[in-house]
Image (tube, rainbow, N blue to C red; front, side, top):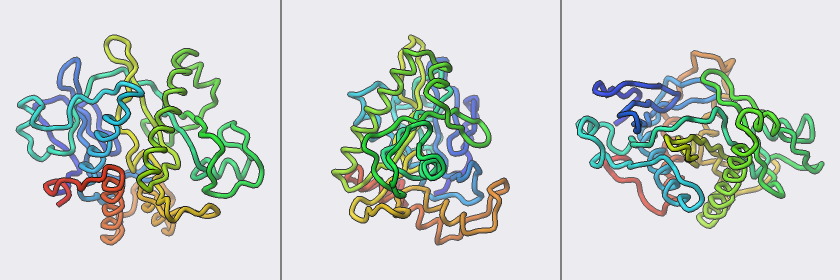
Length: 300
């Protein structure tokens, strides 16, 4: 089954993002529905990736539990049977829905980079640094950095997120909160990267989001360490100096780069073989990281 747009008429739709639909359950809880939409270059593609929502939800639930010792998170349950009756009636949401605590979201993306790729690689080629972090000369694409670096960005509702300096980050959030989010993001990345490496996956970079609950407690929110929010590479074939084979949507970006498309809407459709291969990469990432197969009812 493929779901591109959820319809929970009993609940108020708060936000429809590139991938997730967010509903208000009550003043304390939200329902996040991960659809099978996929975006690239900040454009939603007309082609859905079958089961993508289930895969993202399952990977996030896995990481939320694994990282609970580092920082609390917003997940209440990802089991439809444990959700309110008005949600349970929507059986199409099974496996792709998360009941979460409502938070006041910080307007920033907490990006951590452990390897030189993407916009960081482009920045390094032009300036010898990444978002203000000076790096040694002579590095090549995909090189591992001596230490992970924190490169925050503003959250954009439309268009591209924009990298900001550490000073701008502090100005936005205040020194204490900024320091906490930076330290926590780096701790989460280091723990996750070390674990993933034991499973054969390199987490090249990722982004985290945080919010405060009704008591002012800072929680890890949204999705965490998924193929949509991270670069996952195959550790066995890792070889710096060029783009790496990936388990994430970089595969889709690379296909789109071959087209005569100016990266503005409307986005072109994906050929069936590209969509199927993308689905396969997402499923493989889940299997490698968790050591389990996605339930057949979800994976088709």
